[in-house]
Length: 123
Image 1 (cartoon, rainbow, N blue to C red):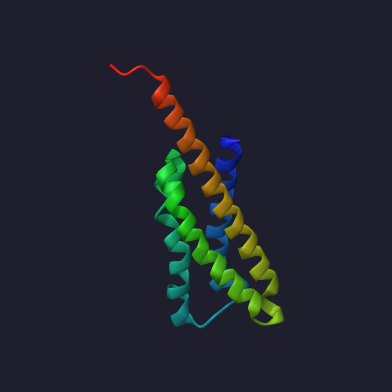
Image 2 (cartoon, rainbow, N blue to C red):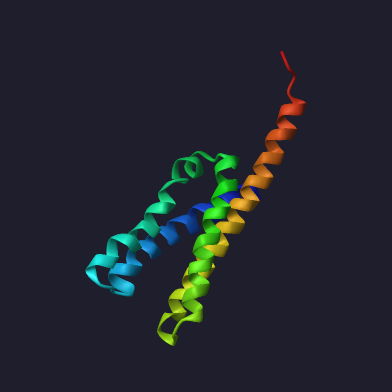
């Protein structure tokens, strides 16, 4: 179960990163001055990358809050015109998967580490 949560987290993180990297350039082309600001959305996902790759439960825990921002942006796309609905659903699915993967991993791995610390003899 822990392994599934970890893979869900990493897969949805990669999907979100690629989605928000490609969105302002190819999927919804915007004006040139707005592109760097929109690319910051993809750049924000780089902050938890090291902790996610190393399997740190604390990083997975606070990355849940990061996922909520992408959830809000996706809901905004869904509330927009018909042209942005498929993009909104894609972003929403990736953000929800990232959120639940992070939450599940942080909870299960944190619990596993707590049990392992109580079972192991203290020197």
